[in-house]
Length: 430
Image 1 (cartoon, rainbow, N blue to C red):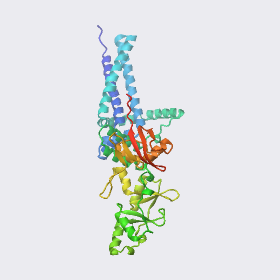
Image 2 (cartoon, helix red, strand yellow; image 1 turned 45 degrees about the vertical axis):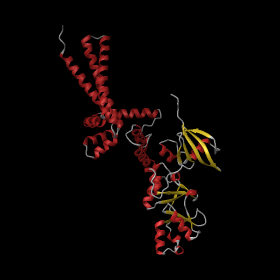
Image 3 (cartoon, rainbow, N blue to C red; image 1 turned 120 degrees about the vertical axis):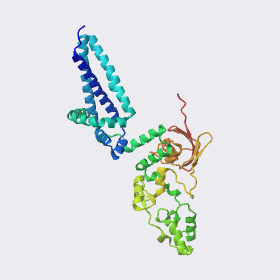
Image 4 (spheres, one colour; image 1 turned 135 degrees about the vertical axis):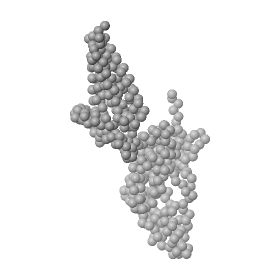
């Protein structure tokens, strides 16, 4: 038996050393791509130096991945070449030696350099990322010239095929990513419905226009200045609202907003004499806003102007509806009911699991109440959704099936659908 060349032991030691580096690269790739940017940002804010290093690394993911893949391929290929040399020395230059080297390195790389480190990294990505960040920072710096060249080649190749991989071509906005994250956590049971609705409501303010939530002009409670003064006072005091629009001659001619506190103060000063009150002088200037204003813009305007009520007008200046600060807040936190509010009407559950719904109930309110996902891009109300999808004004008794629900028309007044029956369609297909 011939003595084994001591250099073989050195070669085997180098192979395992390279496999350890391969495991480092594989685990780093998984951890640094799976780590939460939000958690790393919070840890960096708390003074964690390793979290700061992680944030610097993932700031340019393309360069990071390029350096990791370059390092991983270098050590894997080098380990395989050395392994082939070792097996050739032991068994001679034969197909058997080549096959045995290939099989051995495949098992070693797969188990110890890929599956094991990646499994550990995916289980604790944040901790793993902070552990490898100090060394990985230097790896990225050392490989920077080569990765820059690789990036240039890759970007050029993509441009040839018309693909844009620039940082400005992101498919999803930050708001969409947050919506997806909160929906995922809700589906996994880690976030309850109320918390999900609260966060989604705040995120949706930029996407909702005031016309989608406004009280329609036909439903606005208004005061006619041409009415007797005692009738105006009686109507104002009976109202559940503290701010009421004042108009003269026709509802489009709004001349001010009457506040209940101002009215009571004036009544006190006039010792209850209604005829002594000048409602026009008492009213505050009306605040008008275009129907295309988003809720976020309107909320900012309310805070800036210290207003609580906005009269919504179309492009011709005609009154469309009214939006209050409370309406916008309810889009975030849900219905806010006080001692003067009536119970929310319009949605009546039936014994068979269906709902009887008034036509003017908004799709957003119905989705929120029932945890549904009816589309609200083309219509604001349930009746509007049916009319849009049916491409007609349905008759009483007609039934339509859209978006996984069955809509039956219960009542109609002229061209307005006033009541519907909605039944969720259960898909029995296995």
